[in-house]
Amino acid sequence: MKITLLGKLLAVALAGLLLSAAARADDLLDQVKQRGTLQIALEGTFPPFDYKAANGQLEGYDVDVAKAVAAKLGVKPEFVTTEWSGIIAGLQANRYDVIVNQVAITPERQKVLDFSPPYTYSTAQLIQRKNDDRQFKSLEDLKGHKLGVSLGSNYNDMAKSVPGIDVKTYPGAPEYLRDLASGRLDAALNDRLMLAYLIRTSNLPLRTGANVGTVEDQMGIPFRKGNPKFAKAIADAIDQLKQDGTLTKISEKWFGIDVSKPIK
Image 1: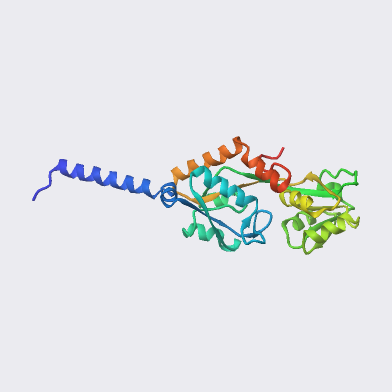
Image 2 (image 1 turned 30 degrees about the vertical axis):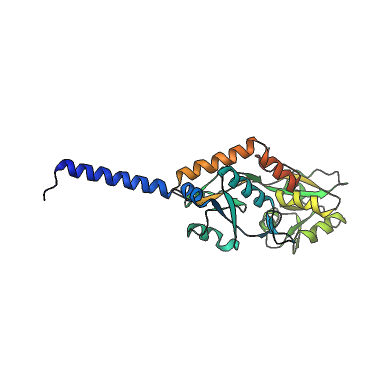
């Protein structure tokens, strides 16, 4: 049986339409809508961003953001807890749809993943005693002074890159905050998000100081490439949450400041 040229052309066109339809059906947005849930990976051990409360329920800034995003998409959030070391590999292996866990948007990650617009902005920041009127505007201003940092952190390396600072290392923030409050340190250094949370919850006489980071970190929601409909939907969701004030309310709830806007 012979197949006419017209028949061949029709067959090719039909195949193209079927492939196009399959591609559209494979978009992550279609999968999420059909399932009725957005599968969200986070650590669950990273307060104040995501952690388990005494009742066993997940709480935190990222948990609230994830719930708000899922609501804008018209689906329910379904949380998957996993260790940070394998969280991106799990996303690439299709174990969940997105990660909402303070994932910084970097050129290296953008090569293999797509991101929502940023929903959190941060940088390195100093913290001082409330009754200390000295204005340290940069790390250079701390030469000859005692600065507390967490051992093994990026801020330890940042502080030690400036000769002349008396850098004191501690196991974690609670230890150096106590020494700062008691006057054994002149300042401490950490991420501005963590400092806002620590000041809010520590009940110590402390205040935030100057931002000293040279790079503004922008955190977004990563997902697998090749999902243009989902990319638009999640971008629209973040934009709407910014415009209607939801992100501001969530930020102020957990940090006392609005971390959803670029740092001025």
